[in-house]
Image 1 (tube, rainbow, N blue to C red):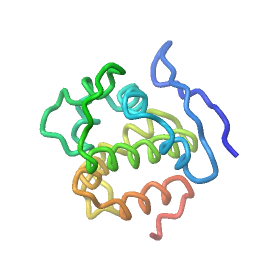
Image 2: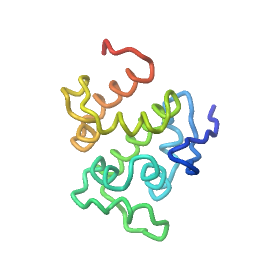
Image 3: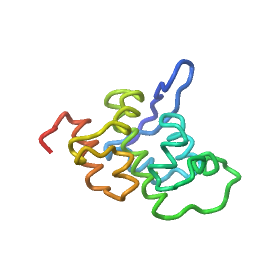
Length: 142
């Protein structure tokens, strides 16, 4: 079962997201790429979103967010974006959007002191899921 919540990402700026018991897997799967990227951009900013996807172009996420942009992105980039969205929503729901952004850019002991952005970019998806789940559940034992 899914519910709609509003994440406050800045003064007067909020993003509507669907959350569910599966760590927003359902919502992340159903969203089209432009909408998914718009939501990530609102919390993380386009440079971080481009990087977590694996792109070397820091402005790629701006293009991906445009609804009229029908040019497909690499499957690897889309996988990274969808998992990044799941992590962002899970952490934002448990804490808030500012904590989610900080989590993505901070060195993480569960990721061998890499940032979650780097781990996503490098395709270390299971490690990222363990790391965000640990934060959300408070279980830092791994």
